[in-house]
Amino acid sequence: MSRGNKDDADIEKIVHLERGDTEVHPPAKGTSDQKNVGTLQRRLKSRHVQFLALSGAIGTGLFVGTGQVLSLSGPLSMTLAFAIAGLDLYAVITSMGEMATWLPLPGAVPIYAARFVDEALGFALGWNYWYQFAIGVPIEISASAMVIGYWPNSISSAVWITILLIPMVVVNSLPVRAYGELEFILGAIKLTTIVGLMLLMLIITLGGAPTHDRIGFRYWDRPMEEYLQTGARGRFLAFLKVFVQAIFSYGGSEIVVVAAGETENPRRNIPKAVRRVFWRITVLYVGSIFLVSLCVSSRDTRLLNAIKSGAKGAGASPFVIAIQNGGIRALPSIINAVILSSAISSGNSFFYASTRILYATALDGKAPRFLRYERFGVPYACVGITTALSLLVYLNVSSSAAEVFFWISNLSSVSTLVVWTAIGITYLRFYRAMRYHGIPRSSLPYKAPLQPYLAWFSVIFSSTMALLNGFDAFFPGHFSAKTFIPPYIAIPIFVTLYLSYKFIKGTIIVKVEEIDLWSGKEEADRLEAIWEQPKPRNFLGMSNHVPATVIWVLALNIKRENLVLDCITRRCCTRTNVPYFGVCWEF
Image (cartoon, rainbow, N blue to C red; front, top):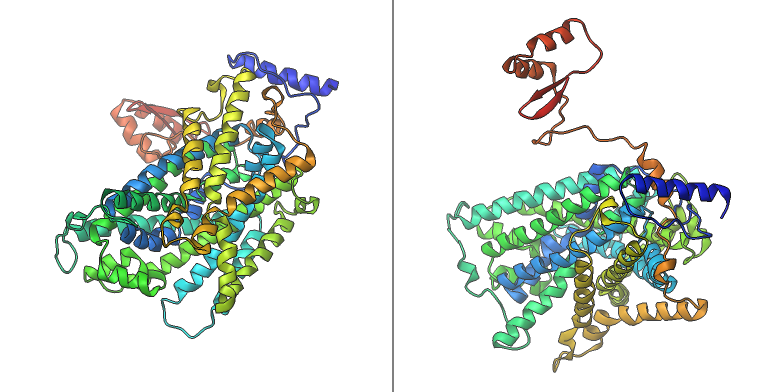
């Protein structure tokens, strides 16, 4: 180790000891602190990060797809499935959050897997994760074109696809701040719409619609529908089927952690986002699903006809059907516009995440070197590759080629569960390495709760669901290429990528004592000291720096008016802190 590296290691050791930590092992010999750091720019602010997960997770699945889920499983099965699947999401996103705040690297999921588990796992996970997000772009563009079809028009779908794809490519070719601002706006629209729909569903079920029909729990007379078989077994199979679909609906929520390498002050903003994202997504999903299930029966004629006829956009949305049943007009077109913006937002988020995952894979040496190219903080080579894959959406223009797109898009149907399983395994290795190096959890920027039990739960739960994903294909009369291959094809592809890299490169599982926890950490430590700290806020969440008039009124009540008056008359440039109600108000 060079003299400079030795001094840095000593400084790192001293800093931890001054915090009251136990002995910390210095970086392993030969490691470079700049490894995997990249040159992307940290331009995403806290408000941007808060909405990234909403953008990726909340799309047409919530507004439209829940109708088919409701008809298949019934209201109780649907609500319980989304609630329990939320626990798996919580385990994944908190595990990722802890690793990302320790090492906030760009698109770091495959990098963590390579460092903490096996180089071969990093390779397989990187390409699998990239394809999962990248193929989501043409899927969402295709869905957006179908949503537009809700409004009668004679324009070719190819034209709409082009109109939707070009702005998406342009936004992701600009500095990341442009992407963050767009997703902040679209996310705010989503959030406002979902909250508004939840209130509207509550009003309808209480009899506030023009029909004045007080619904209550009338449509919960059959809380669990049957699937494939009758009786309790059929109800369980329906619950299991919707369980898998619920997990897929949550896929993309981890984008908030993928963006850690481009987030300002990630050790503050990522933990805050992780805590809020879980509650926002699960409450919005579970809350809206529960309320719409009160307003629409799983055997509603409009719902079943819309599913059978393949209605486009809002035509198949249970929210729109509830509004129509309540005698409310005009809103369906507005909701269809929101569904369109949600699909565009999801596609845009998938585009962003895919480029960062591919860039991280290239930084780690698991993808061609030319993919490391970036300018102005944008990995343009990765943008080009994702754009090329997105052109597959034009296959949907031709009815004969649409079958090809079906098979290509369904290659990633189980990727979410494969990735979540790998993330859980990666975290368990990270957790074990932290204990080996003597790093107390109290010193972590963000400490995930209930670990390592949550990670074990995620590994077992996600892997089990991956194996049960296509269970219905094994029932008599249901086995076919379309029912068997899409649910499972991603698993052998992932295993093939892993074993091929392992055989060619001769990799082994990294020993705990050799796990690299340090490369890239110094850059985050250095920036942490210069990032702007947030202004103190009171219990209302507002800044304590309030107008002089408010301070004066408060001061009159606590006999401090002379001090405030003196500051005003002398035009004192220094600030005065006035305590009131246990809060130090800054003037």
